[in-house]
Length: 277
Image (cartoon, rainbow, N blue to C red):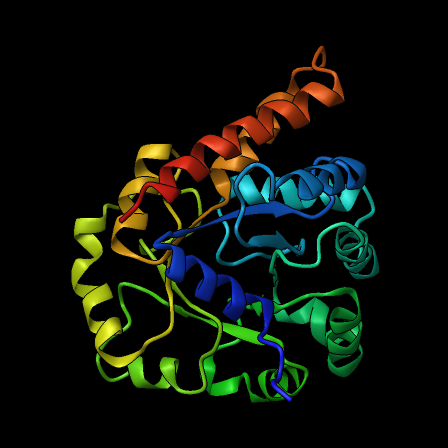
């Protein structure tokens, strides 16, 4: 009997067969409210999301810029917790059992929750992979190995400062996809171009057959197209969170309009990414 593919592997295989690039939007769980983030999550596949990244708020997000930091603080005010985030995913899976879900968060909340308990609960609700920026490859075995045993992947990050000596360590035991950080610094900072990443992506492709995803510094459909042309997928986070904030700060904007406007903006980004060749 064939073992079913992890949703990530299945989605990338289907996109490759269709000659398409993947679009991966990021939202923060609980921002601006738990209800609205859940509604946005449910609407993302129809807005063009091939894979969805959900941020798990943390008080000291070292890789995130002020936009996502502010969203984290608002989510805490909305009383977001790990169980509520997992419940978001469970509710999403009642209507969508195909779109891969990647949880992005820091190791402290996972460790505090209990590694095995967290992995078991995440598996039950339908999580497919994790991005943990403060868990380097040299130290991820206690989380990666049990995650792997449950057919969930720990996504590895590659940055412009990843040199030839470190790259094999990052690639060893990597699964799902490789997250290529387009800039040095935090999310929502400077922008990058596909041309500036050509050397880095070329080095990675020589040593790995995993899909390459570009994130950080992408905020327009044109940039999404540019990045997707160089890689296999593009992630957009801060730009979507900024759009949510603009809508939320307008007190005259009904909640239904916020969801519609954010999903329309996201759909434009998706169209840009999907045009990448």
